[in-house]
Length: 316
Image (cartoon, one colour):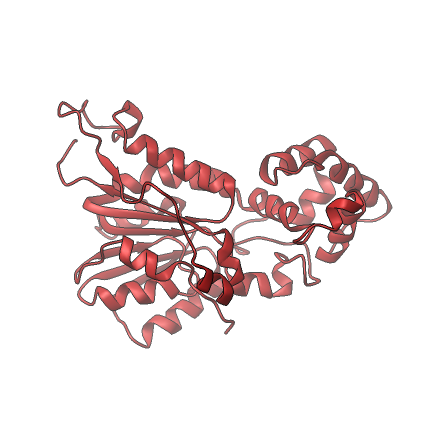
């Protein structure tokens, strides 16, 4: 089993106000790092964990079952978590956690195709059992204009057009099949000054492809529209994001929810007569990893944590 460090662990535990009987929903179970720590504080509570990666579910079950019995795991995308829980009679949660990072085991297993450092097939699917779109299909079939759009919007790359053109030219000779083939194509499209910069030159383009393969921003938008309203009164939702597109979406959503705008209210609630927003920001300033954590786990350097709480007064 690969090593995985749950990012911002102490900040998550402290920020979520875990009680002995908390009902916890971990929407991105991973290898159960956060969930294990949460259950240690919620011994009389219950955990519902979701992950679309079948390996993550298997490994998490092994980890959790060594210490706990009070959990149920779901092998599915977190998008429809509320429907799955409603089917079990669960109507609300005290804690909901979203860790949007790709776990170390996914990055480090070459055949998953997430890594620009190891050679493997261009896959990048989080759920290989329920998603037919792969990174190979994207780079070999999408139009030049669509590739440029993806790289511009999801990687925020100044060289989107050049990279898209290089991919089109390369695939005329033969299909692009592996991660390191794609890395070399990306490098050819970049000027020397970019290749000399710190960080891997293919990192953001691989990020963009992963977002497109898994519809990450679309799914995140949908769950952010539903998860806050699934909280019990006084419940908290925490989101850990790893790039600016995700963080901007979370920040703007939380800001709306903590305001008096009509969008902040539950879609079936009446106008708020008390003039108090139904949610409140637990941390107004984004929480980031400490230097010590980054030294232990460099992938934590881009992690950003935001937490919101549902007020105890009913508004519906």
